[in-house]
Length: 223
Image (cartoon, rainbow, N blue to C red):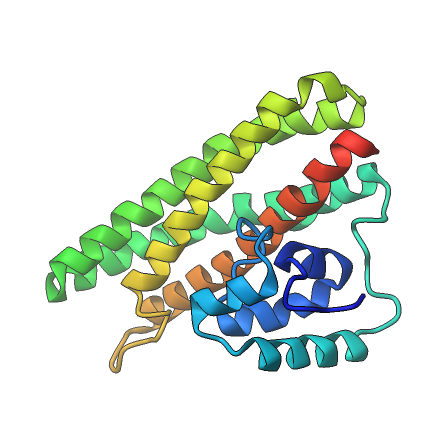
């Protein structure tokens, strides 16, 4: 792949999955913002485009030859990976994070009521959004893709991507409310575990949404 300032973020993430490590380091959105050229994406984060291109090239050169290319795998295999690696994990992880978020809110909320109230409200919205979103994919969109019903995919895919954009906004708000998941001095173990869990949730959802927006949805119309 010939990387230039005009190469889109999503195309890099699609062809070189491990290059997303570079995007994560610089806070560059490679899922919902996958359509942006690298130069524009870097500018929004104040990152030097030449330095990012060099980091991407180094990451790509170091990637193992057996790196999975989900843009080339069978659609059935891609969907099974999304279900197993992302949907199943969310169904297990969200209740755990909810319990920790509730506990931290109850125990520490008085220290900064506005921030902790907003954190609880935002996380609850994230969980509700995901709980309602996953069944739509599992029961409607994924079966239609596997059945090859291209004529009926436009509406459901538009809805899913709109919901992905909304979720992306809520993830950015969680990051803001937690000061980039920096654990404050004196935080208890539950507080620390919550910050770590929310940061992992963000990374997992970025990868999840990338696989759907930039790979699955595009391939559904052509494959």
